[in-house]
Length: 207
Image (cartoon, rainbow, N blue to C red; front, side, top):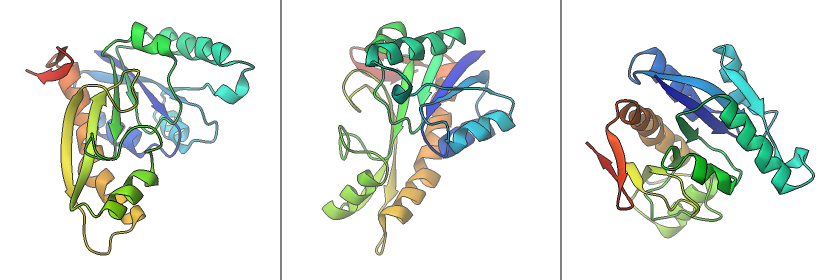
């Protein structure tokens, strides 16, 4: 059984997609053991509690130093003996210790086709604003492994989404979630749970 921790900062729609796909059997041999947020008001925490899943709030604002935050963050993760950490709209820079302890075991979903519209400053609606400003005809979402470089880890899955005339950042965001993010993230977790994913020579390989 793949023991998963999900880190979120907001509403948790990607978390909901994961929970629904575990429930209907699309994601196999997987359990969400922890939902962790930096935001005590995140609705994602309510989603987790409604399913009887353990929750935790660890915010940098609650600690005198970043080092203290990093220590608490790591202690919380390690208490749940996690096999995989999923970042689903988590707006906090991870402690560097995470990449050592969980090498190639942290994945993120990003709302663009990396390497477009990614990296520092590209998150939430900003990604879709940038895509519309540039006039691209296709955007999408990417699931990738996480390393020290923002949005720079090996790409696991991508799915394209058409940009339509009259799109706003909000309408595009919604369609990217519905047509790409909510499909890719469960697919990635299921592949990892089945032992079909490896990172070789800096690239993610699906067997």
